[in-house]
Image 1: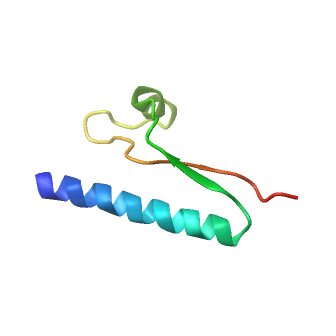
Image 2: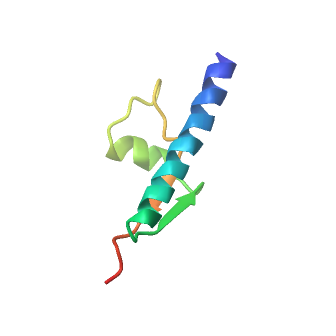
Length: 65
């Protein structure tokens, strides 16, 4: 239903924020982006385009040396 979809998107944001905080704690950087090529992501990770879709993109870096 519409509410479940909204809650899933909110939770994706919470998860992304926690990953960003953990990355910072470990000397990494995290950069969220809404610039997604949904079709390419679906193909690359073999999602079912009928029931699955990417909702959040978060690029991570390795710790600086």
